[in-house]
Length: 335
Image 1 (cartoon, rainbow, N blue to C red):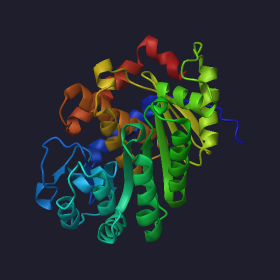
Image 2 (image 1 turned 120 degrees about the vertical axis):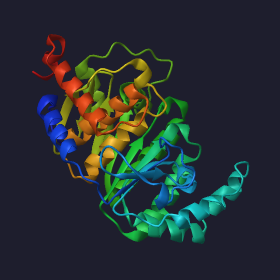
Image 3 (image 1 turned 180 degrees about the horizontal axis):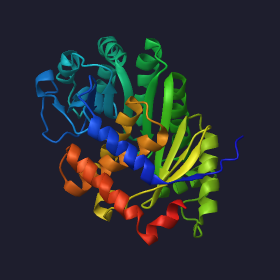
Image 4 (image 1 turned 180 degrees about the vertical axis):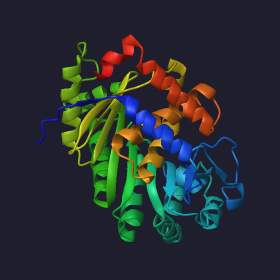
């Protein structure tokens, strides 16, 4: 197994590359569907689609996909969303969980989903720990929809959430299901620093009431590597308020982040904003450092502005981040 020597990246050149790409962006033929859109349009039809600052069409994710624990999707081309919208109108009432499950796994729904997912490029999921029945929903999606269509080029983005809110066997089952998605594309598994430590505790049988000593960087790195080796995934992304670390079999690096206010860091839609930028990076086949930085740019800009940023807003955020890198208290992070 690889030694996992972390490369410390200088964000400066990455930011300059992204600024140039943003300035040159044209409208792309793709569509980004998200459960969180600025205008809350109820009908995700072609007529209601907008173009965001990254040059991609956006619309609201149909309700049936939200019910399956999907946070957002990127599509290769502009699809006809009418079949999904129609299915969303047929969803049984929220109080009937059994009826909803039968509906979601019915042949009629499965056929529509298979046709739709053939056009997908990236699929991002909600936090596993906060979604009731997530393991069953995602295993059904994998078995009945993803596997039969035979695609092998999908990008999956998973967030675990807090594993201490679940039983250890449930966590093990979730990790196995997430790893199984790797048979049909690339899996990015994301955790914040606290979630990563808690996951390590669960995997190693450390009781939740057992005190954990102060963790230095080497301690944390060992825990992160242990998690990565436990799963069959392409990428493990772990971030704190100061940096983000990415592990793959080919590369491992740490990228210093631009500091943001705590309210932005813990906002309910913070992960949604990061995924929007990260997904476009994957769509454009940027390298992982550029994908990660683009996600952080969209996350930070939208968090500060509290509105959907335009192209100039993103460039302004890049310039502010670049200026911050010149401060003595920041420069040591990438030297």
